[in-house]
Image (cartoon, rainbow, N blue to C red; front, side):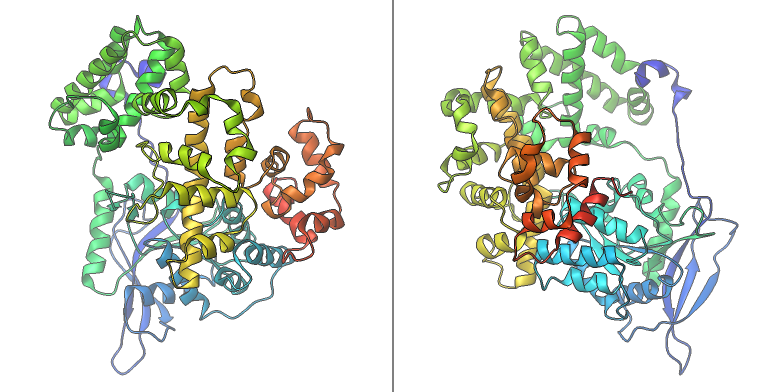
Length: 576
């Protein structure tokens, strides 16, 4: 326990300030000499990470090269085209739509280039997953791509591989790029320092750690002598905003938890689902307390938890920054522990294993006890019942999950939530429907085909396949408890996550088999014993010929068996 090890020593704070060895932050601007075309100029900005620069200087990179009126977007395009010559470029854009638009604008100025065999396979994979006329396929042929939560995990990873192989030189993305992505980038162009937090928070500034987790990628190890972090600016205000942001980097920032405590005028009178919904950061802290209490034991944990809290790093930081906030943290802990008196250890253990707050678990438990006794029958959770043509059973599950504060199953910024519609989308996804199929069936209220498929992809990949398996798995666990036949339906969440109709197909997806081929390959899976290991399964898949993959895909597939095998070797790590 780090907090225990640090003890009461207030000087025990650990600060880590990782930076690339050589990096420059600069504003990217257009300057127009009298009677001549605009030129692209970099104006360096003060930053703690700048190398060997004590003042602001200007670097002329040549003609702007873009036939557009002066704007931040045009300067981004101009800068990306120029810097793509020296290495990979990452454009951090404000939202999914902007990242796609900016990628298309950049691609319009870039010629088609010969693709590697692997890149051609990825292009056909994109056409198979998103439609034969999808814009992303055209972009990749120009060496450009976008990367955001509206794409599947597999497709995002394939785009990262294309960047690593230098088949893609420019990638436009959102703040999701901070989530574990690791690819070589020479320059980062920062169009926005905001991120979307969903309703009701909307757009909020990124923290410096989030910002540098993306911008700090500038400068490829052993490839670039210098990494560039650039802020496109159409006027002096844009330059000043970038300068102000970088100047604030050196300021001490309070943690999210401390900020949440500071915003509370007092400890809430009731700790319940409303508290969880309105205090997300503090709700995570309460989940930690639930875990600590389960481990320590309910009878002895009250005093121990308070002692541990008063000895922790966060308490010392809170006390130094705001003594009132520190005491609120102690009172919140004390109140929560008091509420847990009399709870069964087994129930706490079950709740701790769901990943939800205790109050959300109480809600789910009460729902299946009082309103949905059918949830306690393992037969209810079978594929033939949940994913039947009549989605009534799945609709009842989705309806219950819709009220869990940690989940957000509504569509778009308005958060409109229709349980029966969501159930229909999930059923079709598990049955093998593509994003195009789902968009054209369930998103007909969006008239433009491109926007319709964009909205469908984002809703599917960023909400449904992550949140519904999580919520459904928790509800299933609470409803069936220790039932002896729970193992027969425990795989249901994985079918939704991977978008396949059988346990065998989900197993193949776990070892990297593309969704389009997973169900088809299960016809031959009988050669592998049910007790086989993942290593044995990967070995079996590696022995499949291109003809086996072709048979699994079907005659009308855009992607070929050879494509699928090449992509599988990368997704599984076998070909790395």
